[in-house]
Image (tube, rainbow, N blue to C red; front, side, top):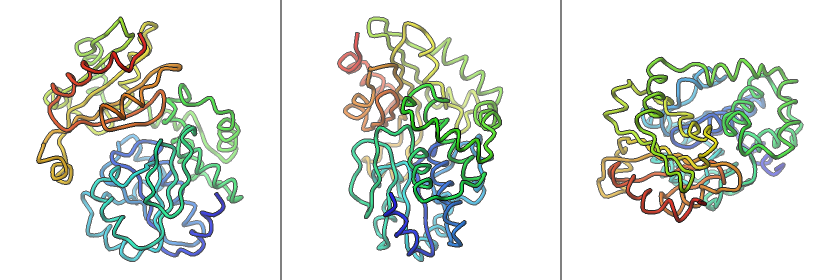
Length: 340
C-alpha cells in the first residue's frame, strides 16, 4: 500500500469519491482519507453523488462534503483543477452515477481502495481486498503502514466504518486483525459508546413506527428456505415520513428469528435523470438489501438476479421497473440460491 503514498506526495489538490447513498463505511473511509491528506498540508475535497443519512452528519468533516447532485458546478470546478482522485468503497464508475462520467473524463491519476468483489480497472492503482470487513479496515491498515498518527477525527471516521459495515461486529468480522485496529482507535481517543449512540440511537418516532409496520404487516416468511422478504412502496414510505437512512438495519431484523437465515429488503425509489437515461426512461428504481447467516451466500443472488453484489452475508442490488416486478423476480429465483 505504500505505493499510494507516492501518488499522494506528488499531489496538491485531491478529490475523494465514494458511492451513491453513502453509508458509514463510505463516509468513514473517504473522510478519514480527507483528514489525512489535509494533515499533510494538501488540499482535499470529498465529493459524493448524493446525500448521506442524517445520522452520519456528526462525523468530523461531514459539513465540508460536496453533494454532486446539488452542487455539480462547484464540484466540477474543483475536479478540473484536481491532480489526484481517490476512490473509496466502490469498485466501478457506475457506482457513483453521473459523477462516474465526470471521473472518467479526468486525466489525473486515480487510486481505488475497496473491499467489494470484481473490481473494474478504471484506476491507475488499485487496493482491492474482498475478504476485508470494510474499506475503513483497509484505510486503517494503509495509515498504519505509512506510520501516520491517528488523530481523533481520523480514528472516529475509521471506527464508524468498521462498526457499521459489520453490523456492530455481528457479521463479516471474524478477521482477527480488525480487533487490534479497534484497540488502536480507542487508544487514539475514540469513544465507541458515543459513536454507537450517534449512529444507532438517533432515529425518529416515525422510523420506529415504520419498523413495526415492516415486521407486523409487510414481512413475508418462506419457511421451507428459512427466508424472509420485506418490501415497501413509495406510498408506504410517505405514510411514515421516510427520510434518508430510515431503512438502515431493517433488513437485519428478520435474522433475529432462529428460523430465518436469509433476509431481503426492497424499497421503491425514484430513478435519477441519469439512471432514467441509462435504463430506457424507466422512472422507478427498486433498491435491495440482502443479509444471511453463516455459510449461506447472498452476494451471488444479488449479482446474478439484481445487478448487484457484495459480501457473502451482506450484499445489495437494484432493479429498474415496478416493485411488483422486483418481488416476482425474487419469488421466481430465491429457491435456486437459498439453501433449504
